[in-house]
Length: 156
Ligand SMILES: [Zn+2]
Image (cartoon, rainbow, N blue to C red; front, top):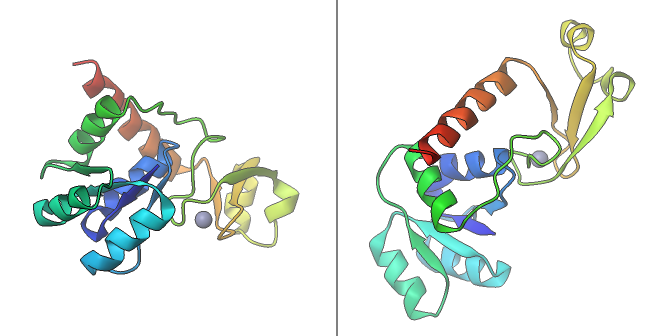
């Protein structure tokens, strides 16, 4: 759905955690970013008004992100694009690579996570793309809290 420029990596990770596809190019060069966005047929997110202007000139979809907190930026995007956000683990995209997650059981990850984590959790998710393993630990709690915060801001 979106391509975020290098300044918006945090926002991109948050979009993924909410189940919204967000890519970012490795390059910080404006031409590369424009090329990458065009090639992937996405909407460009940037805080750079010059880059925004160039993207518009090339007929691309672009959204100029204001300098605000990540939560406020998320709220703006959700409203503007009527995003269907979800914190359901089955919909979450890998915050590292935008890959989809697959739910797996203890036995699938037993050689890959620490024993103390294995003993405390029954459900795990593996990113199909980068193979990173996630579980509903403290990290997930923090995600939930932030999602709740964003949702409450949506209702204001
Ligand atoms: Zn991944």
